[in-house]
Figure 1 (cartoon, rainbow, N blue to C red):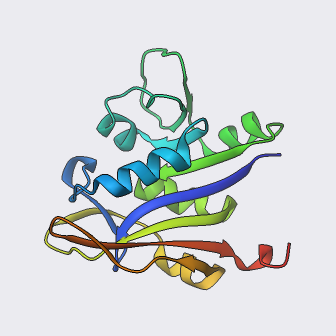
Figure 2: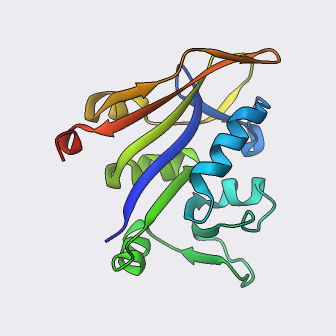
Length: 170
């Protein structure tokens, strides 16, 4: 049975992207953190996130795209019309699966995640288009590790790891 984890960069209010699904910040350290956390894994995302990444899987990863849109077949990418279809397809896998966004995918998949790897970005100067479900995370997960604030260019950020409350004693 797979284990699902979410990896997200969000503002302190939970905003995750601006118009067009683009990240409103450019933090190389966080991109490297994302690459290390997702490399060799299946990455679950929605159509907007998939398209913002060039409509192809990132190197060293396979993609599971939740969408009702039609896309051409592409090696390393599977398309699912529902969360239930995705969960059924992967139920016999014994590996970690990364949930990488966007907002609707986080909203529907967070209930299946045992861990959230959160990068909090202290930046609010943009018009948010998508949100991470912070309220659910704050009530169902506990922070078990966090870094000090870091700075890259104009951006302050920190990393934290949150574990589902029901998994804390496992």
